[in-house]
Image (tube, rainbow, N blue to C red; front, side, top):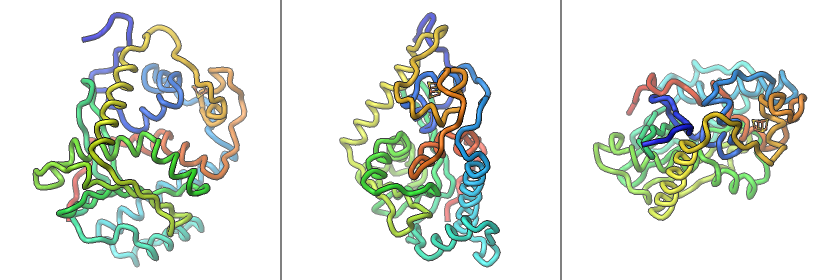
Length: 284
Ligand code: SF4
């Protein structure tokens, strides 16, 4: 199929929304992280302790919601941190996914595209006879809504999650394929629980997503193996990238502002790069 001197991805390489987002934001970052597997040499954002605490709380919040959805009594779920307590209270008051349907929690789906495996792990998918609803919990600071909506719509997560549910979601639906028009995706923000962001889906968007994903993965496969890939021209991105010293794009980590965490959270190793083979389907 390929390609002397072009990228040889490992046979078991799996694309995800996270790795594709890295590539879209900076080709060099994708190369360093996924091809050369360079360790992360610098802190990602300032203030360091605050940033790390926010990431840890984000993970803890996801675990809390997962346990609640699995049926653990809420009285036994006791967040210990102030932020976590506030988010948990907001979740319990709004109950964004409190709808009838078959629930799949932390479910992983995969499909082959451009000869590569594309995977996604969902916080929650709820299947009803009419709909297939994706829920994603966000603990990031919520910027102005029009800006949030535009950025979320353009993110690879929105593209990959909706696309893969149509491509690979039949097993969640008694073997019946899921039509694009049945799919919706909801981002729920713990900081602004009354302002979730919803995206519908349709056949045109599905076809467009397939074109974009195929094109991106093919482009990655055709990159030169032995030379540095293109560095982003959006240098603000570098302030939050741990490779900035390698690229001579500064030493100090950037200060996070409203909305930055959305970008950071989705690209942080360990947050979303979970071992997808270990995730079981849990319908009830
Ligand atoms: S520092 Fe900037 S140019 Fe270098 S990998 Fe990171 S985002 Fe890309």
